[in-house]
Structures are given as structure tokens and as C-alpha cells.
Amino acid sequence: MVVDPDIKKIIEMMNSLGEFDYEKMDIKEIRKMMDENPLPTKIEDVLAVKDMSFIHDGFEIPLRFYIPKNAGKGLIIYLHGGGFVFGNIKSFDPLCRKIANSSGCKVLSVEYRLAPEHKFPAAVEDAYQSYLWVRKNAGLLEIDPQNIAIAGDSAGGNLTASVCLMIRDNNVPPPKLQVLFYPVLGPDFFTESLREYGEGYFLTSKQMEFFGNAYMNTVNDSLNPYFSPILQKNHKELPETIIVTAEHDPLRDQGEMYLSTLYNSGVKATGIRARGMIHGFASFFSMIPAAENIVTMVWNLAGNKINS
Image 1 (spheres, helix red, strand yellow):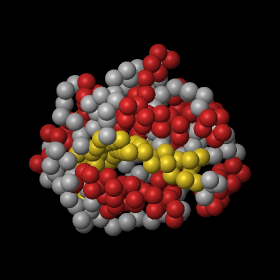
Image 2: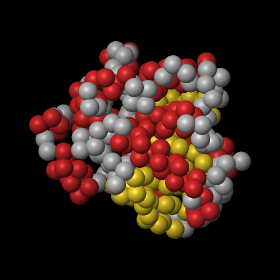
Image 3: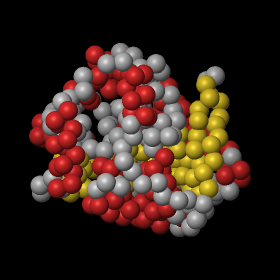
Image 4: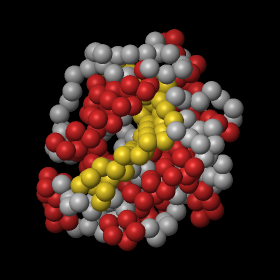
């Protein structure tokens, strides 16, 4: 299928600007630029938004808690994308509002520590601790600890998969569901989607290499299953999973390989390939009608599973 016409306009605009060479740019300046020039978006109303935090490893981990008007008993812990380098609870506020309203679940957005200042495993440990914090504070959040999901996009999808492995390995009660949007799950596998879409489709292979290098301490980290969940030898006893891939995304095949791995390990797993979409399409939901339709559909589906 061809690229969605509205997505194509975004690709053409991005390509006209040239590829960002992150290695030659100051990360803090890029973050500031992104915060000061966010994507045009719509801010959906929810019943309430509350900022909170917890302390882990001597660091304050900011949280943003969303309560939709139609809130059920479930909660989604959301781990944002951004290559482990970018993103925060502010930049993902519009998407988290959308998720809350579409799912009928409360949402807790986690501002985990970023690379390169904080290398692996800082982000995944923050994400894991956020899950423990939610279970401990279920009464405060007024949610049922049996109805918790963990979700994320891109790097956040990686953290979601890694945290679910960590939860299982530590014999902690599992979440009811994990939802992964176009996740990065391991080293470069020279897949068909990487060869076909590694240049000129928003996320590039060069950028992927930069993000990986920023997150890892040494190349040996890439062999750790909490860095590369797809390399985990045992995928049994993981929570029900929804994996959403984008047709024109270099990471598409990784996500679909992981889906097959989970399914073959006895995990209840659902795969959704978003036709005509590129990496990061969920963040374009207010600009791209087709993207919004997919985001709404996925979170309706997830919400029904979480709240049931």
C-alpha cells in the first residue's frame, strides 16, 4: 500500500529540511527546540490532570496522571518515545489525553531519565519502579491493581517489553496487558523493512544507530535482554500483548518478529499493521485523520481488555 497522502506531505516537509545529524548537535539545545516548537495538535479535555512524582535512585521521577470523564477501573502506565534521548510528560501530554479518552482508562505518564546523561539501565529501572509505585499506590490512584496495563511507543515500546520481562523475572504480579506501538526491540537485523524504509521515511537507520549508542554504555549492553527484549530466550508467561507496527517504518519487521515470538511462546498476542503509516504516526493523530482513526481503534480495543 502507498503512503497515506497526509503522511506523505509530512515526509516531504521533513525531507526538505534534510536529515538532522544528532552527533553534531547539542542534545540539550535540541530538547529545548522541541519543547518550544511542538507539533500543532489538539488538546482533548479530560476530567482531571494531576502532576506527581516519586524518588528512585536519588532522582525525582515526574509523573502526570490523567482521569478521563468515562474512567473505568483500569490504569495505563505510559512510557513515551523519543529514542531514549528526547521526550517528557509535557511533550506527550496531547497523546496521553487521547489515550485516556479513547480507552476509558486512567493514564499515568512517566518521565524516565534520558540518555546520554543516564545510560542503560536507568530508563528501564525507572519504568519498572513506576510499576511498583502504581501497585503500592493503587488506593491513592483509585484503580484496581488487577487492571493495570503498561504501554509505550518506539523507545517506550522497548521499555514496555523490557519491564514486562523484568516483572516476570522478579515474580511480581504482572500487568493485565502490554501495548507496544512501533517498538525498537533489539540490534539492527538487516530486515526488509529496514532496507526499504531506513532512509526518507522520518526515522532513519543513522538516527537509530545514534539513539542506540546514546543509550548503551558499551556494545555489550545490546546483548542484555532488558536492552534488547527480542534476544530474551524465554518469552513465556508474559501478559497479553498488542503490537502496532507502521507499514513504512524501518522497525516494522522487528515488531512483527516479536509478535511471532510471543505467539509461539504461548502468549496471547494481537498484531496490527497500520497501513500507509510511518514511525511515530500516533503523535500526528491531530494532523492525520487516518492516524487518529488507528489510535482511537487501538485504545478502544485495549481499554475494553483492561477494564473488563
